[in-house]
View 1 (cartoon, one colour):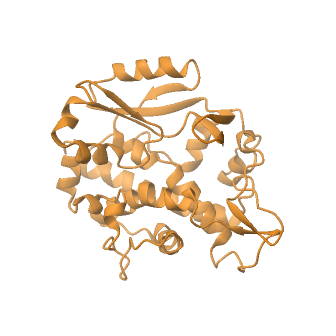
View 2 (cartoon, rainbow, N blue to C red; view 1 turned 45 degrees about the vertical axis):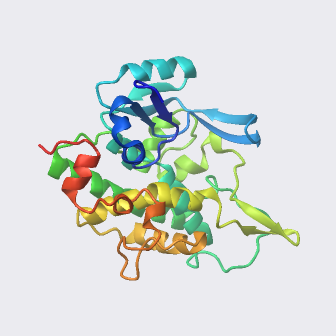
Length: 299
């Protein structure tokens, strides 16, 4: 890559800027990293690498650039997307990392439907609806996870005076991204159940003898735990914060995907940490090291 190259990631998920810098080394300082919070659309591919069906277009999406001075990159990317969605500048990539909806929604909804707390292990007659099938138990799991991420945000504001205004709750993310597409916004569950962009989207399942069993190695666990939830959990651990809901989802999820991320004591000490975006997997175990890697100056 040539100096000044804009590298945009949609979605960046969590810790994308730190991973980018660690892989490029000294070259990273000459590049522009742009992390988007999510995809511009709710979509599914119909022919891998060639065709996709757009189910809904988001009203706006956030993006942050590193270095922070390279804001012209966002205008270039807006030109590629067209009028919608509107690309809005976020103060820093840490806010993008902790705003990451996929790290909560995907593992959380999978846990809410298929963990032993909710499922008897028997096959289903049909694949359940994913977003529009969220029930009260799943909503409780999602709220627990998003609340724990908010604790991380508030602590980072306290210890580093970093602007975390965009790292909002999951419900606020729905209000920001899908305003006008949800019939009921009275609760997180209602936002997900009545979102027209999610019409008909089902849980990833495999058909077995005419019935359906969950695909527990699907990307909702295999990608969103290593590239999202691990980052939030790892930073929480560095900050000395407890995350009981995230912990139980991760313990269940890591067994599903065959990784050891959390050690026996529930800490980020598993042998597969280097396969994740956890700060610890990149050798970052202190707040000082994290701030340096994130290019955040403590104030």
